[in-house]
Length: 312
Length: 291
Image (cartoon, rainbow over all chains, first blue to last red; front, side, top):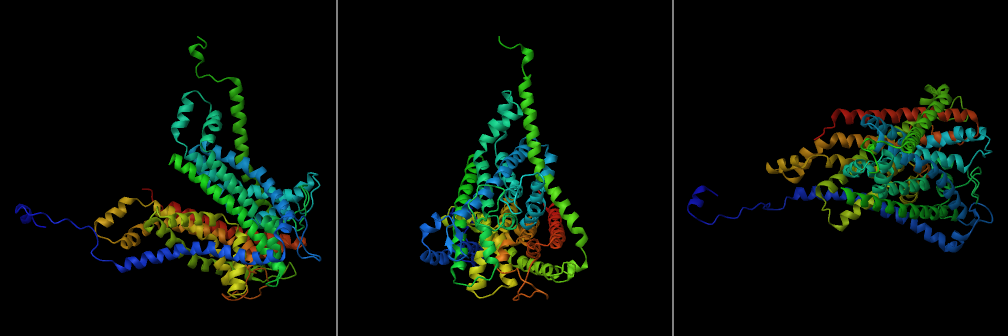
C-alpha cells in the first residue's frame, strides 16, 4: 500500500495478518510436542489396564466380599485366605504414626517460614528442606530399623524388632517437607493486606498467624495434609524394611504389621509364576492402593486450585 | 474513657507468654526434621565409614561381607542415569512446551492433561513397579532387564520434569516472544531460538533434581526384578541391579556386618545425590536470570 493510493482516495485494502498458507513444518512440530504430552496420558491408561485386568481375574476366583470382609491375609499359605483387612489396618497404623509427626511439624515449619523467619533464614531453610526431601526412602528405612527401633527399645517401650511405630514415625519425618512446602505456598498466597489489617487492629503475631493466615490458607493446608496422607499410604521401602512382614490386625504400635505396599513389594520380589493367584494378588492390592491414593490426590489437587482461584 | 492514651499498643502479659510459647513450638517443629537428618547422617557415617573402600566400589556382591562390593550396582545406577536423561528430558520438555506454548487452556482435553500429570506425580512409586512388571517384564516379554528399569523410572519422574520445565518456560517474559513475532518469526522459531535458550537453566536444574530422585528409588526396581546377583557389567538387555536395591538387599540380611556394608553403600549413594543436588543449585545460581 503506497501513499499514492491514499492520496487518490481509494479504499485501502484491509491488512491481512494471517499466514497465507499452512506451514507444514509448524504443524509437524506441534503434533510431535502433543505426542510427548500423550505419553503421560498413555501412562495413566496403562496403569489402569495393568491393574484392572489381573484384578478382574482375581475377583473371579475370590469373591470381592470375602476380600474386603475377611480378617485373615495369608495368600501364600495352605489353606490360602484373602481377607485384606490386616493389610488395611497395617497401612492405617503406619499412616497414623506418620501423621503424628508430619502434620504438626510440617504446619509449624510452614508458619515459621511464612510468618516469622527473616527472609535470609527462609532462604536457607527452603533448600535445607529440599535436601531432607531428597533422601532416598531406603536410607530412611535403614535409619528406622538400625537406629530408631533400637532407640525405642532403649527407652524401654518394649517394641518388636519390626514395628509399626518406628516405621510410621520415620515416614512422618520424611513427609515433613511435603506438608511444609505445600502449606507454605498457600500461606504465601494470602494477600499482605489481610495481615496488615489485623496488625493495624493491634493483633499479635500469634493472632495474625493462627486467626488470619491459617484460616485464609486453610484449603491449601488441608491439601498438604491430604497429599502427605496419600504419600504415607503409598510409601513402600520404609515399611518393607522396618514394619515387618506379618499381616495381622493389631492396634499395638509396638507390634509388627504388613502394609499394602509392603505386601506388594515382598511378593513382587520373588519370582511368582504369572497367572497364579499369588501373582494376581499383587494387582488386586495394587488396585486398592491406587484407588485410595487417587481419590486423595484428586481431592488435594482441587483444594490447591481453590486457594489459587481466590488469591491469584 | 476506658483506656488511657498511654496504654494503646501495650500487650498484656498473657499475650506475651502465649506468643513466646507459640514461637518456641514453631522452632521445635522446624528443627526436629533437621536434627533427625543430622542424626541420620552421623549414624550412617559412623557405621559405614570402615567399609568404604575400593572393594565396595568395584567388586560384585558376595556372601562374605569382607569381600562384598557394589560395583555392578553402582555401574547399573550410572547406566540407568544416562538412559533416563536421554529419555526423560526430551519427553518432559516436549510436554512442557506443548502445555505452555501451544495448548489452548480452555479445551477440556488440555485441562484433563494437566490434572492427569498432577495426579501421576502423586501415584505411589510401587504402582509404577506394578506397571513395569505387567507391561514391560511380562507383557512385552522384555524380562528383568536394565532397559525395563530405566523405562519405569522415566515414567516415574516424567511429571517432575514436566512441572519444572513448565515453570522455567513460564518465567520467560512475554515481551521476548512478542518481539520475535514482530520480527516475523514463526511460532517454532520463537520457541526454539528465544524461549528454550532462556529457559534452559531452569529446565536443567529441574531435570537434575528429578534424576537425583529417580536414582534413589528402590520400590519400583524391586518389582522389575533388580534384586538379583549380577557379577558382570550390566548391559541394556541383561539382568541388572542398582545401588539402592543392593543397599536394601544388605539391610534385609540378618548379619550385622551386612548392615555396616549397607551403611557404606548409603554413603556412596548420598555422595552421588549430594553432588547432583549441589550441581543443580550451582547451575541455578549461576545461570538463572530474573526478569
